[in-house]
Amino acid sequence: MAQIIDGKAVSASVKEEVAAETAKLRDEHGLKVGLAVVIVGSDPASRVYVNNKKKACEAVGFQSYEYALDESTTQEQLLDLVEVLNRDSRVNGILVQLPLPKHIDEKAVINAISPAKDVDAFHPENVGRIMIGEYSFLPCTPAGVMRLIESTGVDITGKQCVVIGRSNIVGKPQAMLLLQKNGTVTICHSKTKNLKEICLGADILVVAIGRAKFVTGDMIKEGAVVIDVGMDRDENGKLCGDVDFESAEKRAGYITPVPGGVGPMTIAMLMKNTLTAAKQQAGIQ
Ligand code: NAP
Image 1 (tube, rainbow, N blue to C red):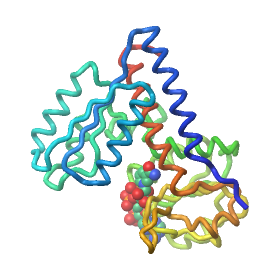
Image 2: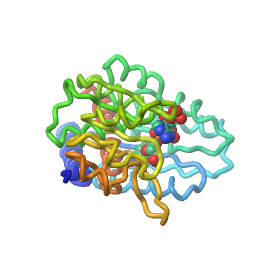
Image 3: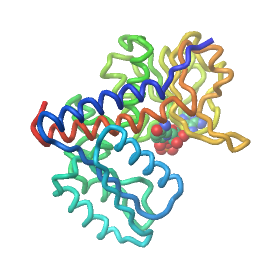
Image 4: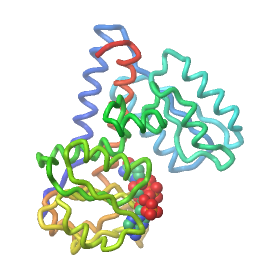
């Protein structure tokens, strides 16, 4: 039976580290850390994410600034707001909650955020920096996955690492981070042949595809580290991951549950990125 990787506990320790450093910045440098969160429209899931981010800001001692804009906001108006936030010295990090309404070009908005305040690490400059290993911010979900793997004590060096999914926000950066830690990385996607065979060779398997319980126990190597990024709904509408937990935990050495695995890490890493942004903007190491 696999050991469960407790994402809530690991994320709590990241947030504690951030809170302690935030208090130190305030006491020693008189600095306040600020995160601006922009939401356009009334998508219920986006609202939940934004509320959770605001709560996390309060918990670590950040100031959060919420900008809740009407669904009818034009792209120009949103770009104007981003420009104002880029110049606002109280704001160290800017997060525009995605998805945006269809009439707004997400890329144009992401590209308008100052790379120094791009705490989601979606701006092309920050994406490029990850490729060459000279980054300030790591995208929150893949960075959270790395912390979870680290928490198992398993050394990535020389391990066969398989990432299923090649999205710009999870799969691709995830593969790059595993490569930087000296893993031997294979990236799989919907056109991959012999997926089961490839998965069976994985010492570390990260699954980010958005298909409920897709990876089953018979696809997992005995003793592997299995990280489930998926956030899906099963046939009864219950939250579940991309991995069939019940069969997978019988084979894996370590496994993340859904909920309580990768999910809590994403927000914790956002807090960490915002703190890093504040320190860099103040010229503090
Ligand atoms: P995405 O942009 O939809 O990408 C899905 C990827 O999975 C694509 O690369 C796709 O391949 C691949 N894929 C789909 N079906 C496949 C199959 N049958 N076999 C192999 N590969 C397959 O999704 P995403 O944004 O990366 O998100 C993935 C999952 O993670 C979702 O459940 C999402 O909700 C979750 N997520 C969770 C968090 C968190 O904080 N926990 C954060 C982000 C995302 P192609 O490229 O060939 O189409």
